[in-house]
Length: 239
Ligand SMILES: [Zn+2]
Image (cartoon, rainbow, N blue to C red; front, side):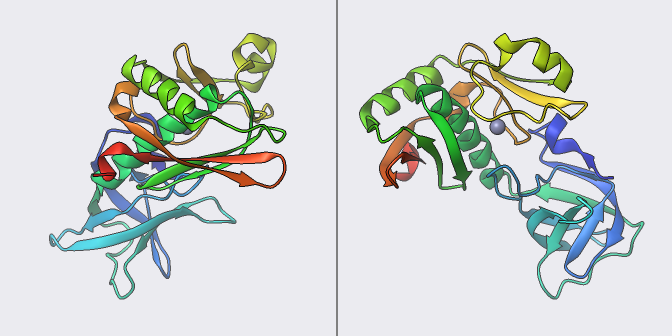
């Protein structure tokens, strides 16, 4: 099992660890700051620096479908260091931080739009959520204004672990949930944006909503009779 540092310390950009297993396309590590693809958030990219100081590109991070192991995919042609050797890994932090900003903003979006979420995805350029609005239209200007208000309020984003039984016993905690949490698990990771949103999530988030920065509603699309898709982008990219 890889120690998932990204879940505990999402601002940690690098770590020293050891290769615990080698695969055709990549390596498993004893610990990692690299988030594996999941929950609509892309897998991290960056570099692996071996004992000789060679920088090798990590082109993606994914969980093995069968074992759940976190695999750091190396650029094709890379000759990986042997199992047991010590390596440094370093995130492409610019990209990851954009994921954290967009991901946290999608939590705010789910709080601002009063409909159930039916899907979502994000990249370093944009993010989207699909809502079952029963055909109702959404007001892009209102959504953008509401997001800006919650971002400007610089609300704290906190993480805590709760058991499924505890969560079931406190129904007031789940009033804003749009997806049924995995109640059968011994521990569920809750992300709370104080006063705005509370939901189980395994992704990486910024510490305060002010760090999200200025966001724009790029478009609202119809996805069938009932669903509407809200697409967000970073205002700094519009220039
Ligand atoms: Zn999240």
